[in-house]
Every structure is written in C-alpha cells, then in structure tokens.
Amino acid sequence: MERIAVVGAGLIGSAWSMVFARAGHQVRIWDPAPGASEAAMGVIRARLADLFAAGLVKEAPDVIAARVGVAATLEECLAGAAHVQENGPERVEVKRETFAKLDALAGPEVVLASSTSGIPASAFTEGLAGRARCLVAHPVNPPYLVPLVELVGAPWTDPAVVSRTRALMERVGQVPVTAMKETRGFVLNRLQAALVAEAFRMVRDGVMSVEDVDACVKEGLGLRWSFMGPFETIDLNAPGGVADYAARFGPLMGGITEEQTPFLYDADTVAKVAAARRGMLAKEGIGDRSAWRDRRLMALAAHKASQPG
View (cartoon, rainbow, N blue to C red):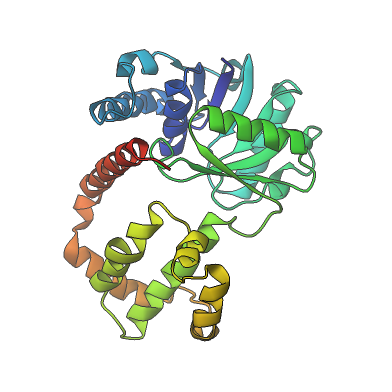
C-alpha cells in the first residue's frame, strides 16, 4: 500500500487520515501548530469508534488508528509518501508557501494535492518546478462520510497526475469527479451557492420562513438528491426524459432564473436568518447537532451501501 502524507491536522486532515487508513494505507500526519497532530489522533479514534458502531468499518478502530502516525517534522511526514494531501488555511499566500516547501522536499514522483474549498491550483503552483504534479482534490465535509472528491487541475497539471489521483480516490472508497477546467469555487460549491442564495432571497423577500425553506429541501428535493443528481432527476420527471422536460418546463424554469439576481449576503438578511436559526438551535448546541448530523449521515451511508445502485 502506498504511504500517504497528510499535511494539516484540522478537521479535514483528520478526516482524510481516516479515509486512507481504513482502506489499508499507512498515513503520516503533521501540523505546524504544537499539539495539533496529537489532538487529531483523539478525533480520529473517536470517529472510527462511531463508524465501527454504525457498521461502516469492519476492522477494529484501534487497528485502523494504528496505521496513522504523527510526524515530528514536515520532512518526516513526507518521507516515503506517494501522495500528499494538504489541508492548510484557506489563504492563497499560505498555500503558496506550503506548496513551495512540499515541492522542494517531496520526490518528483509524489503527487501534491490540496483540499482547498475554492482556491484554484493555478493561484499557488504556477512558479513551482514541479507544478505539473499539483492539483486540487476538494472533499466534502466530512469526507469519511460524504465520499465525493472534486479533482481540479491547473492548466499545467499533467493529465496522468489527475488520472493517478482519481484511481487512488476510487481505491480508498471515495467518489472522484474530474473538472475539465478551473472555475471559481469549483462545481459542488457553485451548485450549493445557487441553492443557498435562492434560500436567502426567499427569506429576504418575505416569501417563506427559514424553517419552511429548510423543509423544502430536507423533506422534498433532498430526498431525491440523496441518490440522484439534477440531470437524472429531471430525466425521470417527464415521460420523454430531458428533452421532454425542457419542452414542458423550460419556459417556467428559464423565467425563474431570469429573476435570480446575485445575492451578496447583505447584513440585514443574514441577521434575520441567523436569528431564526438561533431561535431553533442555541449557538452552544451547534456541536451536538453537528454530531447528530454525522450520525444521520452514517445511517444514510449504511443504507445506501446496502442498496443496489
């Protein structure tokens, strides 16, 4: 099994370590912040216990956790690695500095992937000697429960590097998708941005309450979208498929999008939505509710794994 280096031991770094370790890979994790990697090991053990209890991993949690080791230095983390997964702060200047170090220290055959949520690889790899082996591998939080990974290369990324990373992600049980070019925010974030912006607009314009907008998704769209994408959804929503759907509903849907001007998160609307949410969930309860979300995702993942595709 290839050795994996995980650089950055926050929530995403911890989650990636679990993804690779449960698939059998030896993982080395490193973070420049003192104590961060050790804290990550506590998170990893706790989450693996949850996954085991939900039947989502077959090996004992301690066996999987034993594949993850804490590196004292970045050099130690990278030693012998075939793939590096970087999970540092979402600031382009930090990415540039980190990738310069990775490019200088890692052997030329090592893939350098970033978990960035929206910074294109071209913004922090252009000046590197090894820029052809750099790309974005953007996960969905938490990646040990939500398997999608967006692979986005820079214009100079070697296609073989993208293919190699896609194969690795498939081997560790993730679902990679490949972007053919860079776009602002990648694809998943753009899809999410469109829905979230419209949700805010419905509240801003007095059309519906925060609670009921959420219900439209969790009790409506989300039920289908948990196992079908938007194209398959509309393909099945008209007897003649996509073309029939467009003929029937194209004027309506197109007219709606003409009304959807950019939403720029104005302070008044954000405050209104935030107040509604705090009325339903105190700020102190967000952590517990997030844990509840993860348990629900575990149950959904277990259900989907038991069903035919």
